[in-house]
Image (cartoon, rainbow, N blue to C red; front, top):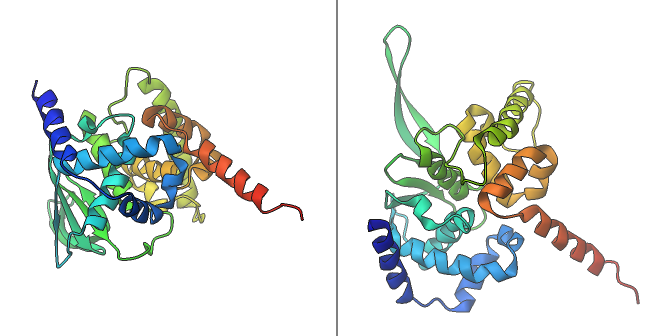
Length: 267
């Protein structure tokens, strides 16, 4: 009952906003991986983005000014993974806090002798269970090639859907936890071994930190560099394709074929 009311409320709020096509296009042009989405799905992504913004509160930290461009960019990236899952996957929290670049979070850990060690952790983003998503924001192009902070942190929010952040989001009935584990466990072990050997991996080595980070990094790659992920870990790609209900590697290959074809024309 409450979820139905929440959906109605955000739909009504989204109805009150009109974004010019030129503004959508300007923001989307800064997110080239959106081209891997079939063109017929672009209007649905735009609509969901407006409903997302009606449902969330975005605040700037340390001088960040929240502009329409920033709002639309975050919304498009956050909604892309749940386009075929639904915004209810992000229920239970409302806050998004945006920092100007990477930021520091104070941490403390207790060692086996009971001694507390405090330190500052420099991060690009963080998702808190039941709480806000913290995001870094860089004017212009991100200095971190192939890394998508928004998709990464919202993947953590999906991972929290079944409780613990462990690389196992709440799966639909069409997916089995057994198939998921058979794809992800050996891939994670292999990736950790490669990183431990000092290999310069094409995928972000941060994925070796924890199974939850592996899921988030693979989700980034699924949308940003889908062909690379499919070539590195095809079973992981297949599970993510079924989970997200999308096949960006197919679209990437089609676009690549069209580009190569147009460059080999004859006089």
